Image (cartoon, rainbow, N blue to C red; front, top):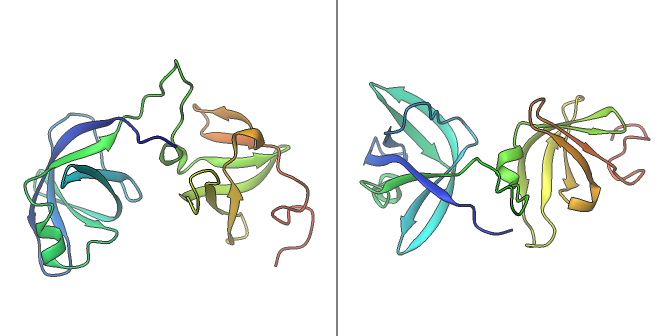
Length: 175
């Protein structure tokens, strides 16, 4: 997967408290940050992603808790840096879709609901996995492989997949 194009949407402010929370402001109308969104900051010349694990409003801005930022010192590294997000538009020329754009989508297989995408993991660059919560409340990992994806409905936020029989226990009792 290639790095998504980023858009500067605002800026990080100062750390808030000692547990790593940091203030942020959004400068673009219509942009809302949500839990599980990825935000980026340029650190030492590299665009570093952070998953939003908690978000609160404060005045006209936000207080963000970011995965991996657990103390005031770490949060201070982001202070006054540009706050960026991946472009959510799909590059029509390459049909490139980013895994983070599919968080929240419902996965189906042959019309049967497999579950909702909570996130993804990339144990290796060539084999990303969707983290999916089943209707039974279990969290499972399924391959986010192009060859298994039949259709993505962006309006309904669903992904129809053709998963190998027994891959996730759809045809057997749950664990």
